Image (tube, rainbow, N blue to C red; front, top):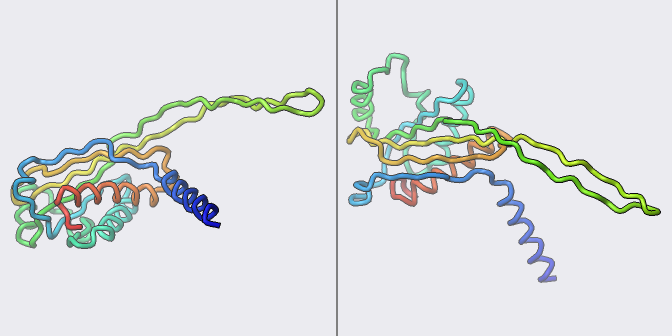
Length: 191
């Protein structure tokens, strides 16, 4: 009985990790932040994606996952007149923001992979073959940056890769989890 439970739990854990197709490829943090780590309290979340609906979904999901930091979606805060960076920074500081999280798609890499065919034994000496075939893989690269408004500089940058995403929602969730984990590990966001 114990062996069956162990096998079942191992398979479930394996399936759980097999579904995750997103990983943090690159990460950089400003070394000066580690000298005086002070997690950010209020951040503006900006995710300029292909259309307004995708942007709203992504920003809503980021805000929902960042629980111990006040996070505000850009689509609820910014106006069309907010185009001059210096004036916008003053507005953000006045409203108590100390950081900006900016997430955007940087590239979609396409590659081909060959899937080997197989041979099966049949009845009476006959063999059956399945031919090999090519598949196209797509890797979506998303860059996320964390800016300090007060210092007017880049504080952290990371690039995630997602191989053959099955759905927009799942991919965004995986990217946010990878980014949030790294920002919490660096002390930029509270755990």
